[in-house]
Image (cartoon, rainbow, N blue to C red; front, side, top):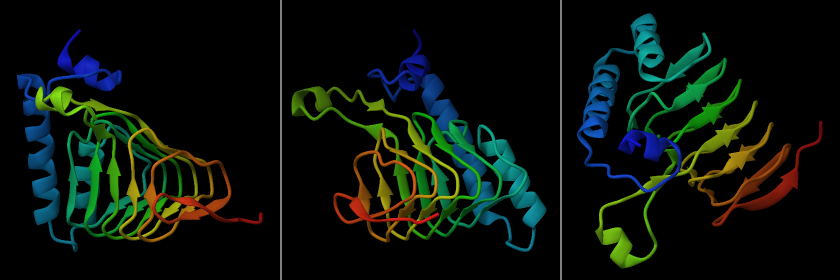
Length: 185
């Protein structure tokens, strides 16, 4: 099994593997191009995002600056918007539904490290998939941690640290995030 295959299957993998280094470099070059492309060139920016992400809907808008690890593991639906300073660490898949909005300075992190310090010193890491449903809004400075699944119509309050999964139609906030209220249909 390659290090990439291990990474994508949630096993410990070596991030210093040459193939993974090359893939991160390609993503860095694409994000660098995106971040240097003028906001008046909307079509060009959209083309860069379509080439960087694993899959997208037709309507995708990402403000600069934007950063990710691989890009190819990010899958977003139709009508996706990410505001300034978004960081998506996509060592595992990040699946985001339709009509989702990400406020400034949001971090979505699939990558994680061993808790045991001796294991952590090895340099190995692992990643857990993140899934965000349709019609979600992630507030500014929120953090979505590895392995989290958010249902449809979820609102994440600004500054929330989401450490566990939540179902549909909730507003969550705090550190760690908890349900603040239900959303009425």
